[in-house]
Image (cartoon, rainbow, N blue to C red):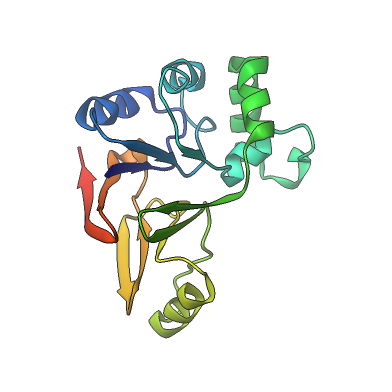
Amino acid sequence: MRIAVLSDIHGEFGKLKMILDQIQGVDKLVLLGDLYVGGDFPSACWTLLKTLKIDIQILGNTDEWLLESFDISSLDMHCRQEVLAAKAKLNASVMASLRAADNEKKRRVGKCNIFCIHDFKITKDLSLALIEQRMHDYPADLILCGHTHQPMMLQSKDKILLNPGAVNQGCYALIEIGERVENVSLRRL
């Protein structure tokens, strides 16, 4: 089974379209959040995404900013402007899909347990040992996260932590799973 993992689209329609053209024929599509805020074409991204079979979609922090329950006054001026610009371009169907999305999801593919979350809380001052410890706190073989925009893969014993990078920077990941994870590749346009 081939799985494409995308994160941090941020309304970047051109790069999203190019990546989707490259991943045609994958069996599953995973979206790790931050879909619309930040780019010029959030509604075009929505129009394109709604034509696809998305197997897992979770909320990113900027997706949560779009929800009525989020108080945008807590954001800096630039982020507030980005949120208001995105809200002006998005329709009620987009908002309904965001309200229906979860912050995290678990799935099983073959014998592989997958855990998806937008922000795995990796910071520059976090040691490799601490990251590995956090990985082992999750009951998953494969942990998929986004948020940092930095592609990375870390394997620790029988666990893999994968961040595909940001679509708005031309990055994504492909994973092949049989009974277990057989291959992981980080890609860039």
